[in-house]
Length: 300
Image (tube, rainbow, N blue to C red; front, top):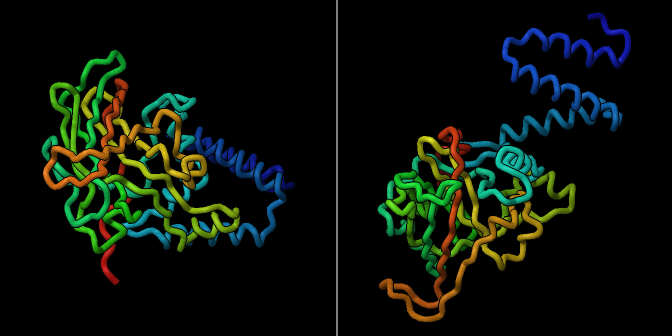
């Protein structure tokens, strides 16, 4: 198509997209092109701004490594990750589902029920977790694989921190006959997301902080059930209302109970914490996501 005026550009691109044999790809890309072109018209995007945007996209790729995924970090910081999660798992915050985030590793070590995911010296109050997984009718789901990961009380995931043992504060469990897993950890802390790349530039331009409220990550899967990805937040974290990744829903605020009396578990000093949480898994396809990272940062 010979372009006669600016409106013709959109028509020409959409016409070419009709050739795609993949109906879903054609649907997504056609909508993307329409909205992208309308956006450029609405803001009267300049050529210099387009070049800046292209450089920004390039920088996202350059900032991503085997231990850091800048693109997923950006999607969260724009609210896109949370939006897509709620679009696909119910709205209004009633779902147990949450975004995957940029720090899940797929090879967490198998851990016995009741075991600990603390794999290197990790200061902080002990946390004992009991989690139950049930279907929509309340029946326990036995034999589900449950992957757990979290940041340290210092605010770093082990893949970010060479001083932590490989796979510290990560573990993979299987639910028992009651649909339950239990384990020992340390109480997670809120933490700053990395801001030495394009995401940091975005946040500074908006005048936003880079803090995430403290939370525990969960990924549960079993054949016949939709893979559940979740986060359970600490209720007294000061950044619940302003999570830089927009991930907090009312349903996902857990009851982390502080205990002042001595614990029965050897080597546990007061105060310590406990968390009980009930997860609901929907019937559907069991499919694991692609891991956003695959390795661990090395000491400089």
